[in-house]
Image 1 (cartoon, rainbow, N blue to C red):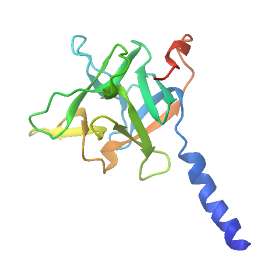
Image 2 (tube, one colour):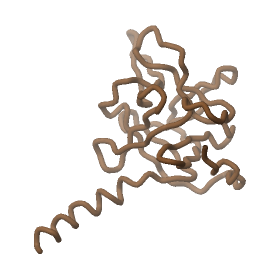
Image 3 (cartoon, one colour):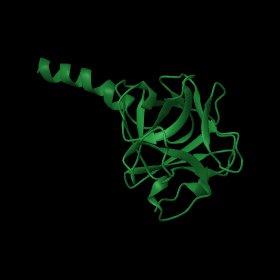
Image 4 (cartoon, one colour):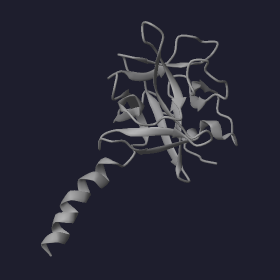
Length: 172
């Protein structure tokens, strides 16, 4: 009896801590302590990180997630173009496209109960910070390597700036 009680005490906090928040969130990187944001390049719709958070909308359907940048209503996706300095792929946002799996993500527990890995289901690569060059220039990309704090993200629930996001709740 005592062992069952102990098991419940140990496992219950982990179970509750690992539930992925849906709806409006900010997405904070564990390594950088900065936030996932839309990049400055309007033409490419790249993503970046910043000390100032932006809102994202997470919705779940059939075991996978879609992640939408609230101000632009564009979805996070992993590009198929390759990076010359990394085995990963660049990550962008774009208008929603139904039936294309590059914008579908698995969100799974990280090494710490408050953090998650964001894994693209089409390429099995995790969203993370990549470093290259003499000055360790950092970019966000999806990389097959998924271990380390640079691949772990915390979702902080916030009140939605946009009230009409219900149209994005549908799943494929």
